[in-house]
Length: 189
Picture 1 (cartoon, helix red, strand yellow):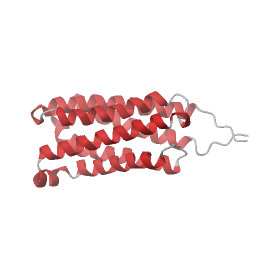
Picture 2: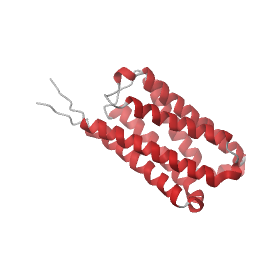
Picture 3: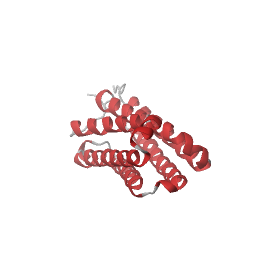
């Protein structure tokens, strides 16, 4: 008889991550002016949740990785980047908006690079059908980080739209991963 009590949690958390990213991305595309004022804070909260759920899923939810330390570092960086984004108003006055954008861009690149490394290095440990969504998810972080470094601050509305599209893509990837994880049968001997 198969018992898969640990199986639903990774799929549920991937689904929650996907829905949160989709909601933020759709909001950014529908109302970029309003989203510009609120998306920074909401995006920071979402990145914190993403890092926390990923870390929880990795440590307690049955996910495996051949490079546990790198995977944990990726999720901790996501949490730190989210905290940095949420603290934006206070930090903007202290260090300036352009410096903050550069720091967040570098952190997003590091998160994407760590996620891509863990995915490729641990490819054999990934469940069937989750390799490419994980690669695309990591690539979305990388692209977001690069865009933050090269996009001028004067094009903030364009950046909000690009972030909205990236969040929708990431959300769709996470929902696909949740669907794949949910459809796997675990057989216990």
